[in-house]
Each structure stands twice: as C-alpha cells, then as structure tokens.
Length: 203
Image (tube, rainbow, N blue to C red; front, side):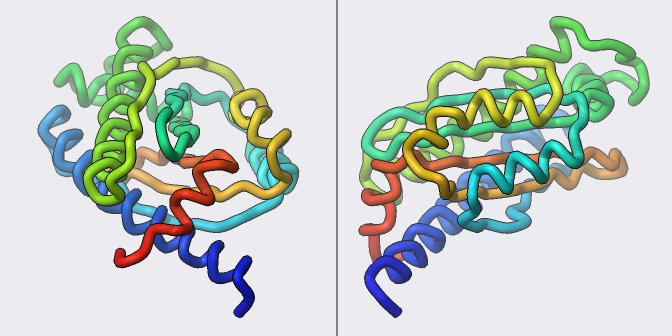
C-alpha cells in the first residue's frame, strides 16, 4: 500500500469513527427531543468523483428540506442534512408532540424542526472531533432551504468541486420508531482538512 492509499484509509477510518460517535450522541439528544427512540446510523463512507455523486442524486431527485452547516476551524467541513418533504412533516409532528399527519405543508415549524435537527447533529459531531482529535472546530448556525436534492447538493458542494474532483462522503440514515422516515447526511471534509484528519492516529 502506497502513502496515498494509507493516508486515504486513515482519513476514512478517522471520519467514520468520529462521525459515528457524534451520531450516537445526537441520537440520544434527538430521542429526548421527540420522546421516542431514534438511532442514526452510517450506511457507508467512501471517496467518489463529485460528478458521479451529483448524477446519482439527479437520478433520484426529489423535493427535500435541507439543513446546511459549515464546520469551521482546523479541519473545515461541510455538513448537509437532507430529508424528503413528506418526512420533514412527520419529524415536525414528532417534535411538536402531534399525531403523525397533522402537519400538511411546509411552514415555519417545519423549517425550525429541520434546523434543530441540523444543529443537534452538527454540534454533536463537531464536539466529538474537538474532544477526540484535539482540534478546533465550530459549527455555523444551520441554514435551512427547501428545493430539489440535486440543486441543493450541486450548490452546496460547488466550492469543494473546485478544490478536488474527488470528495469523501458519509451517508447516514435515521431509524425512528414506527415512522418510516428516510433521511440522508453528507459530511464533506474540505481539502485542507483531509490532511489534518488523515494524520490522526490511535483511533
């Protein structure tokens, strides 16, 4: 294995471990918020050409609500959480303590609910990076947008595409008791952060 491959493996291992630790913490906080069991799992972590990822999202294009957070500091990253509109309505009902199906349309409550989830997840992940890797990392306030998944992904990852053709992606999903909610999380390290994270050992 050459140095480049070893560095990539170290980066993937570090991000996987830290992200899952952060998602475990976020699961506990989110469970308390909605008063039902919630688990957030990593489906896969991989390096991929950004154009291929964009094409895959375009194929399964759907209207979503997204929370976008910039993690700034020693290892800057982009955090993107997307949930289909119908599922965002269910999450809003859970957070508000209402019967599923009560919320019918996108409104300020739906926006606030997705913003809160984005804040919980991004803060939990960044906190674990800070405490475990001894680096400075701080999440910006979540920006919530409603649009098609392909448009959001392309716009939010545009700067990353100018840095490198290949990006590291973490895909995750929510398992919420009896709700059937399907969400996706992208954690996208910037080019300079890859060098920092790939040099961390001992995890």
